[in-house]
Image (cartoon, rainbow, N blue to C red):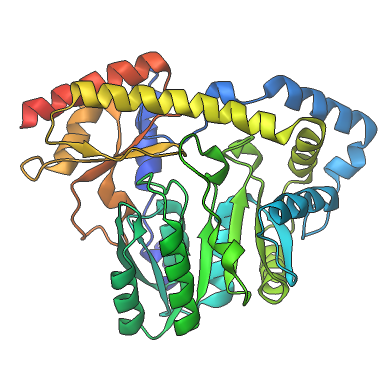
Length: 394
């Protein structure tokens, strides 16, 4: 049988991260390539107790079909949470999605025809890049500087691509770079989007995980025109396996997202939505988040301290104020792909930076490190191994 695939998917390739993660099935491999929350961050006993109560008191509600828009008590909780941050506008509403990934893909689906342009950061999250590619859009990457996307380059990209429909951004502790966009740049991005009449899709899965510095208002909080689609998630603050995210947007595009979601999966897992709502109703949200921040503050410092001690000075790396990732950059005389391959041979998995570019043809000398998944001992051992690989290649 010869299979002919649609043009929409024929050019798609497996996620480089998922391919590398196959190596981590070997317990001896140190998983710097992952992006999972720390094992100590999961409130497993509390979730078990909440699940038991739900299945004892409301089993049919948890197991039956439900509303596409999402579990009403959870939507109410999210509305209150977003309103405190100045995110929820008068004409905005909230829909529950199967992770923020679905919110991003559906946003592209409702806005973009084949051939339309989506502008994103370079580097950017590979899951979103693949979602955009599956809709056959023209992807344009704009460099990320130390304080966020390059505004001059963004303006040039908008001028060069008049068919741009959306700008995709991760302003807080960006995946993969760990960089946070300054307030000045958030305002400038919004001004450009207004000037060129394009939508901003703001992806904020890590915003609550700030462990240093001061909070910066989301771009959505600056939105006076219904121009920003804000995507959030419970994956990094409660459980990624539950696949519960949400999208906050003007009610008009949100209606189209609901229709497309009905085609995609009818509704997000209702049991998981009920667990999320119960957990954050019963337990203090701020205390829970502070516990997570303490975990990641310590693990980030441990990895950064060891990188500074062990790595050759010619290798640079970002110092994130939150999130889960560090972006390391090799000197020109070390081939990045060879470095990543040699690291895997030494039982340390990192993600090559090319995985986060809009095209594999774009050269980069960087790679991504994750500090949330590995144990403290593996962080120390893994950095030593990476440093020895780098020294051997210099």
